[in-house]
Image 1 (cartoon, rainbow, N blue to C red):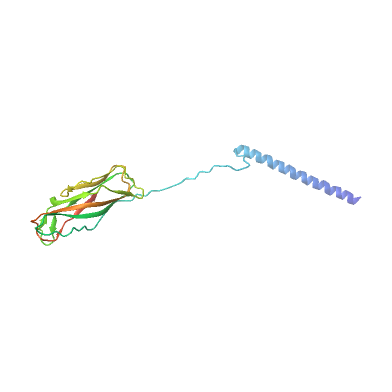
Image 2 (image 1 turned 90 degrees about the horizontal axis):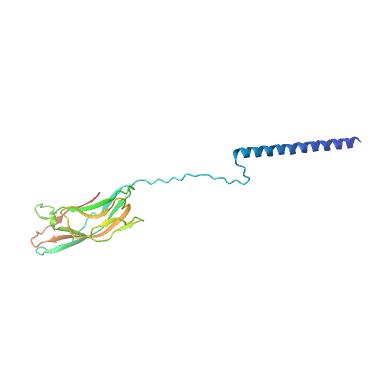
Length: 202
C-alpha cells in the first residue's frame, strides 16, 4: 500500500512539474509575441535590408608632355638647294588631372646655329613642320573634341599642333609622325647646325 501511495505521489509530482513547464513556455511565447508586436519585426524567417556604403577615390595626376630628346636630319651637300627632312616620330600628352580643363600643344624653333660660330646660322623662317593627321587616344581615352592641325607651317612663331577642348582630352594621347623640314639654300655655309624646338603644353 505504501508503495502505491509513493507511486501516486511521484506521478502527481511529475504532472505538476510538467504543468509548470507548459505554463512557463506559454508565458514565454506570449512575451515573445508582445515584444515582436512592439518592435514590428515579427518575422520567423529573417529578411532584413542592410545598407553598405561604397567608396571610390579618383586621385588627381598631372598634365604632362613627353617628346623625343633629339631629331637628326640627313646630311645636306653644300652648294645645293634642298628640302632637308626628318621625322619627329612621336610625342605623347598625358592629362591625368581629372579636371576636364582641356589643353593645347604648340611648337617653336630657334634658328639653326653653328655651335662654334654663332654668326653662321640658318634662320627659323626656313624651318617648318607638317604634322600627320593621325593621333591616338590610348587606354580608353576619347578622341572627341580634339583638333589636330596638319598643314605645313613655319616655326619662327609658336604653332599649334593639337588642341583638346574643355571637357575633352582626358587620358593618354599618342601623336605620331610630324615631318620637320629645313630649307637648305645653295649659299649656306658648311657647318654643324643645332636648333632648339620648344614644345609647350598648356
